[in-house]
Image 1 (cartoon, rainbow, N blue to C red):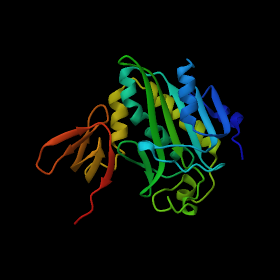
Image 2: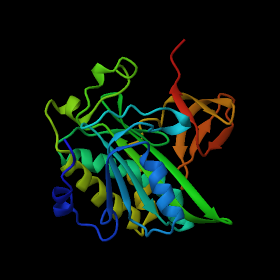
Image 3: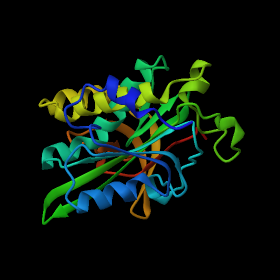
Length: 258
């Protein structure tokens, strides 16, 4: 069933984010459309939403399972300052977490850098792509794939690692209500003048901290204790020899006891 955009707009309390909502029943990727809009000069806040993606992608070039009628596939165009740009990876998962709770879903945790999880499984993935004018950000596109009513057990490739709001709470959830709550929360965190408060809220839900992890990035892997995150959200890893390394991005896996 197509999204009821009127229901979404009735619940929005934003000034910019989602006020211009571009909806597609089927699309290759919301990220591609939103990036084209950004490069064409569209205003901050334009939001691309699809009922189905045929070429959706996640971090590291992975395919995002995106069947029709059950989930939210959203890309938000923003034109951030350099300081706000660094916080987008915190703003987006915080907005997802708040939206999930708003529709009666479970409390969630974050797996660094920006996966949202419930019951030990992935509930939402976030992808951020940007364009620059010199060293200054010209735009960023924040892509959010949120499993709302997906039954992940029907898809063998993700059955053990993914979940949805409905799967966790045992009932069908309104995608319109979820989208409105998501966009409303996103704007509030995005506009928050207190970057330290945003970081603190994000850090409080990071399940990665305190864990022995492997972090793969740039063709190499670092091992150690996920000790903390810095002001920009980079992971501070303490190696087994006691030295520390700051990792701005990467793929984290928990180290299993030998």
